[in-house]
Amino acid sequence: MAYVRYVSEAYNGTAVETLGPSGYVETQGAFALRLAREVGGRLGLKSEIAFASRADVDEPLVRVDSLPAHHYVDTWCEVRSWERVIAWVDSIRIGSHTSLI
Image 1 (cartoon, rainbow, N blue to C red):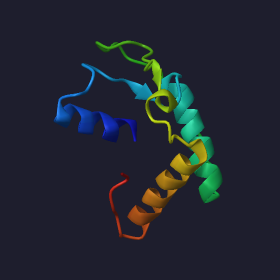
Image 2: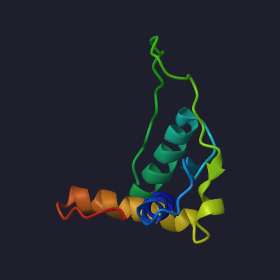
Image 3: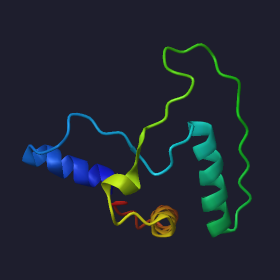
């Protein structure tokens, strides 16, 4: 929802220059664990995460967006957000894929 709002504001010329909203201000690894727990639990799947060692690449080891999404989108609801993700995943699994937005 934060990105939808931002794109709308950008289109209308009222957006801030940059936006990095995050539902969770945490590392990608922490989010991967959260995603596995939330999605796996809702789908009844055992979701295991294994982190590989990182090769040298030209990007930060950790990147964290600093604007919690709930500060930008007042309708943010974590439970509803996960339910929408699961509905989207299910639509792919049964072949009736629609937009997540």
